[in-house]
Image 1 (tube, one colour):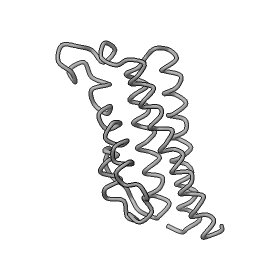
Image 2 (cartoon, helix red, strand yellow):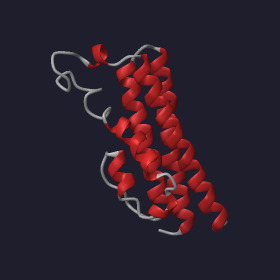
Image 3 (cartoon, one colour):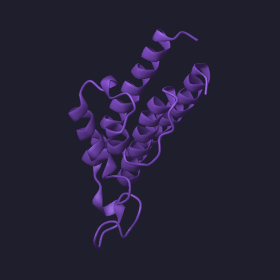
Image 4 (cartoon, helix red, strand yellow):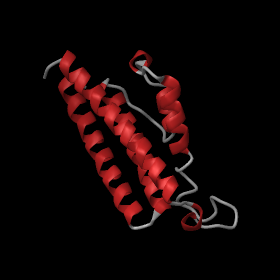
Length: 144
């Protein structure tokens, strides 16, 4: 894939991540906290995948931690442990926020609260921001 095509495709992934973030915020306002947490996880996964795609790589999987740990340009991640910590929080929202058997005897709606959604949205906002900075930095180094 050409550099121009990589930037284009990465921008599409990041735009979709932003839509997921908007959805998470709306779901939180609607007091659907489990759903807000899941959308925040989805947002962050897509933001990190946008970074991979910008480099011409093909990311696979749903674990944000794994996507960070296997990132093809690790020197581009200045605060590795901080990123992993935020990713770990979000990875915990991938399954149990969606399925009634993900937690013992409770539904996701009974298990997640405003503080969970607030934290997830905050982490997702971080990942969207750093992905945007990453794409902008690549664009500055390699003008289209």
